[in-house]
Image 1 (tube, rainbow, N blue to C red):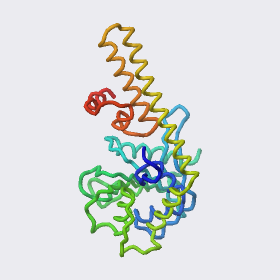
Image 2: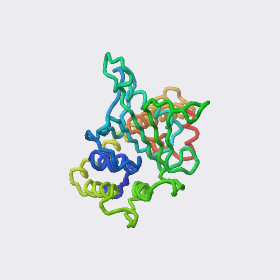
Image 3: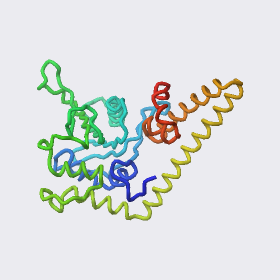
Image 4: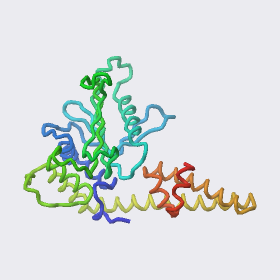
Length: 292
């Protein structure tokens, strides 16, 4: 377990605590989008839930806010690499859009412009870019934009195209991942980055946040323990009923798969992270991945 002091902004708990402060979130958006005129109108909401109907699947977005031009921003910190991240942002976009249109509203132009930002410590597209920005364009005429107000941005903290982004952006990427606090002559002391660093320092110095972090960790540890025990017991029970070793092993594997899925859903972690929490040997990861 990491201590609160050891957490970086890649860790969801610290990220959520930091960007709950609208000034810190505004500073983050200004650096990423390169827009010093951006002013948030509302307080950032973390863990905001979107659901189109009670019986349908919901999502919880990391942080959600609106600026003074009614633009909506959703920013996600994605530490684990998954193969569904692009489609996941599409799903987020759909649910956010559906929540923005008031019942009975027939003018679709009233839907707010939205920007979904996903920050990752890996290069999802493998081109070495820090920033990948996607908007709809015409395939036959690439210069023709659809102008539907939807934008998705994927941030790679390990980018190599340093000449295409600002020094402050690069410094932010290093701080997000490593908590580095190096002096940079290209960044003013009153910069956006300093606001983020100050907020991180306040969060880590807060006794209240420290207690909250321990409670969160204990809750997640209990979920992991209960899932592991359930998988073991149900696997043993099913094995006893079948009366042979193969039955015990198959029962255990099936229940472990259920536990993996449960942890992924409840904690928002990758399959690999769930298997690690359940104590599954890394040599068996491929076997369980195929069973998911």
